[in-house]
Image: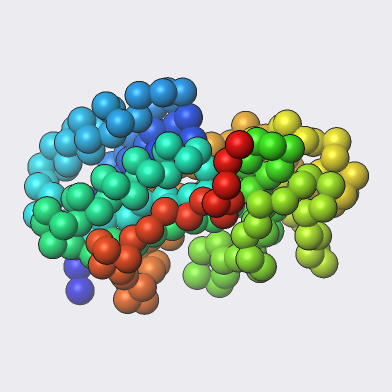
Length: 226
């Protein structure tokens, strides 16, 4: 069986990134832009497909970061994913933004347990705890939450663990007081990257964990914004 051709992208933070798996390897692009994701994402995907000499119709599936994160960015990602999937009749693979952060820590630093925190405004963080499987994929140890930095649920941690995401930068002292100091390392500036979304999507594709376009919904965790 040939390797699946999957296009993955993320717009849930100030990074706009895309990655594409092909038989020749992985192609990827990432740009930092506080605004403008709507205008930049589709041209970025076209550039990536052109670099690999592929069309959308050549893909086996499309993956995207489903949130949590920027409300506008989440809606952009889900809307574009649905539109592309409907257009070429391909399945979708939603991937948690928090899981994507954790996967990036494993890819770059070898971290196998990662506590992720993204600034959720309103003195709260989007919180997730991830552990590496034998297959090299991060899986959640508990439900993702939106919660005060002073009340994040702390799992029983064994060995080395890492902290990652903007919440660790903004609320470092409060999270350390709650969780202790990350024994492996701390990366408060880490942003989600489509390469890590792609790694998780490839594993889910092989497991058959696909959804139709109508079922590919954004995940906000918080349903109310003031």
